[in-house]
Length: 220
Image: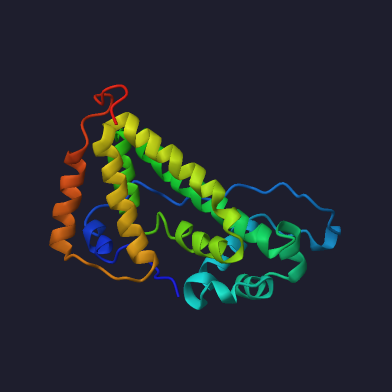
């Protein structure tokens, strides 16, 4: 069973300030197979199915992720599910892509709010809910077919390249710390620090990387 939040102290850390993130709707799907008109789902069903799949993985574990379980969880007919996802592999692949896209949207929202990239990543990675879909998606992909994780690998490579461009090695180290916290929560290892220690550590992370653009070209 996957925990429902990133790192449990993050909730109390962010409970006193509003998050800059609103709801982040998923992207609309382009049908890839012919479906009788009577079974074409209503708009929004694709995102409902993805959220249902996330709940199934988090609550019951990836072994219980089946098309029937997702359709039942979402309250959608089997035909409605197959309209969007003709196979379990297609569903898991969409979960990974959607989770990455949602986090990209969170980063972009923070950029538009005026945060530099590293600060925006730190804020997004420690705000409850921003990675709730990506974690279960990665577990489901690893269990179903490890090749399905490749889109996430590409996103992470791009994020680390951006961190290096913005803050050199210090920027990369900051992301490694944040992703380590993510993995701890994803695997259910549990919090290793108190709320106060986490707050202090995150403040130190924000000071770790130099200002955007100050990293020397070619710095390791």
